[in-house]
Image (cartoon, rainbow, N blue to C red; front, side):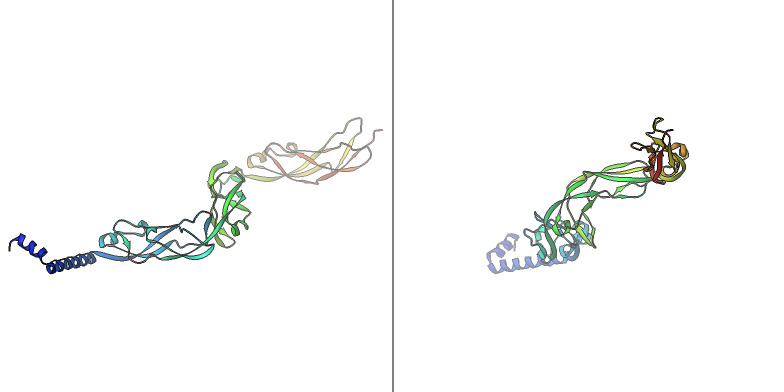
Length: 315
């Protein structure tokens, strides 16, 4: 039978037409099944809370699903290529179970879900805000001959958003660490506020859109030195008022300075004095010892802190 006659017979007779369609459909499903495969994957889960709410506690980092696709595509697929972006349209305060939808899954072309989307358990809280002091964190140590003198942040207070139960327990927030490893000079850089951290034995999360200018002050390492037998001078005495007597006449002073300044320190390098203003002749008093150290030197202690002074009457 000519080719045109076969085609005419196939479409002129309804039974023949139906059988042909069934066979074609069976063949398509058979070939598709032979060339496709199902496999389970752990898909990364990214959660975005609705406005005025925030996610609290730990959320599952992945969800396990079965995916369906051509055998070659499924075989070459990795979990890193898969993502679920989930933003619930409505939430309740506290822990609840939420159903993922097929449109939440971002899958490569030709890959589809083999089962119904899974459900996840999440906890949400309403968002509140507070202003909290900033504490600068740093990591590492400066060079062996240097040390950290202090830290500061600008601004020193920032607005922080989070769950009320968390904010009520915080008095400060911390910056992300500033690395000072091996540094010999002050380090200043813009850093963000640490938003996820451990607090009172649990993982908490806050939100702060600001960056702060964090400064870690570094100086040459300082050492302490005792300066002995520093004479106590008098200030305010005059020839008309008579001679002043100080007991004891010398004091011991502990100072702190950079290592390179130690050699130049001695009794002559530190000035100690008492102010005799208002002291009347013949009436002994105890007055505090004042110390004037050289530049770059700070006073730690003076022994004794007070001395006895008397202004002798002129004869």
